[in-house]
Length: 326
Image (cartoon, rainbow, N blue to C red; front, top):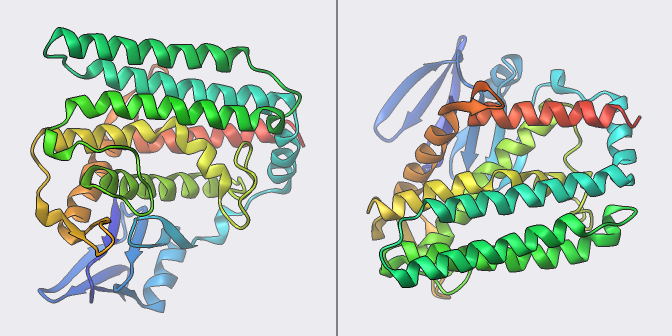
């Protein structure tokens, strides 16, 4: 379970071996059992006693900005990385195996995009034709990625980024056909979002960033040593690589909410520059929807596993891969 404090004035304190959440409506005591993380947004507060309890119980504390992106984290010293993983991680980055790894990541990302498009029900011949064309174009980029090679990732990174960008444009243009007309958007916009769907995608990806970063840290991996994304100073760039495997989960949740008419104008505020931002009601609905989806147990490689635990298992496998390069 994840505690999310994103309402202005909310505070979290310690009560013996449990937490107490205080809001304008009153106080609620919550035991530590089952809590895996605490997420705190601007305007909410946590006391040092609550932080100490979280550290004792190995519960990560994550501070996020208004877009849901992690900006700071407190975790238990028991998560400490061993040197063999970190050394191997650096060596892996400059190996040819890293080329094959990042290609596998992007191939899986595009395959996921194709699968989500195919889930959409076409209503007429034109939609069917446009959908088929998008699927085929995405397959063309998968074929290009498979054939591309280089000694190290940086030899092919610019080409991969270009193809990945074009593939994402094709993907979002195709999905745009299957959402209510009032929510359709011209293009993918990030910071800031220029429409409600992009605002929800941005916030959802922020939630996912935090979960992936936490899984990497717990597995002993340094999230600041990336493989394809290596140029951003003081950023957890490995998260930007790994998240490509899982973005589709946020896409599915957001498109489901929109198509089920579960999104209202009250979810957003519109700033003077025309940008859209999720407000408390919208954030709460999206956080709950994403967490419910991640908690759902599905079969993964023949084993029943929640999607959240799939991320953790992948991070652990990645750590074992890195250790071999020490």
